[in-house]
Length: 288
Image 1 (cartoon, rainbow, N blue to C red):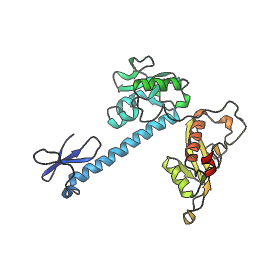
Image 2 (cartoon, rainbow, N blue to C red; image 1 turned 90 degrees about the vertical axis):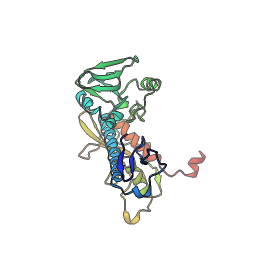
Image 3 (cartoon, one colour; image 1 turned 60 degrees about the horizontal axis):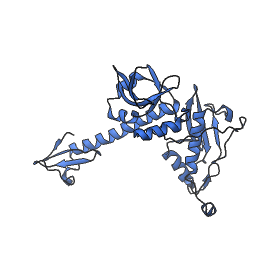
Image 4 (cartoon, rainbow, N blue to C red; image 1 turned 135 degrees about the horizontal axis):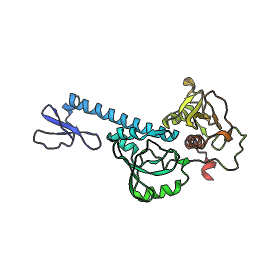
């Protein structure tokens, strides 16, 4: 950590990015003197903290988008961003696969010359030099339970939540000709703004009274949709309930359940379950 002059003091950031201060004798103060709250050095540090927080979130968002879409990622890109602590934090310990979807290990390092450093499934540290890798969605990992156990043994902590992300697999007795899933429909909310607020806080877009989760899979975009009601700012106290879960293409045409890919299915069900969890719990339901 570097100290920055601020009047008769010096200020810096601690490990939690909180502004700290020391006096001319080098003694760390318990709190920031009031006179320094608007000092340019202090304001600058706080602005820097805000920028780093946003940068970290953007890195994590980008990595999760790669995962949700199972996009091919050039190994050279990983090597370029790895020195950045924010990128490294988002990428470290992700399970990566080759282009054919074969698991190759947990990412521990990325270097432009030496390639990618991994812990493979035998627990050995290895290096590979592929051109492209993928960060697969967990529903695509056949040995997900085994990978989760191995991750626990290794003490893996993924920022992107790849391995321990909730997954839903399509049931074997699925009606391929069906067009909706009612499992989480009918969740009651006393106020529309509560349901709309829950959807946005979970990161979903709201369009036309529907909560929408878009997934790019097998070369096309499919949107999972759930009716949550048109929000009326003049009647925000109106109650509402969730509708059934459906999937559409980008033109708004309904996609049959048999045509929904495993990632789109899992992410749609994840959205439905998350919205449903915020419902009003009736007394009868509590008693059951």
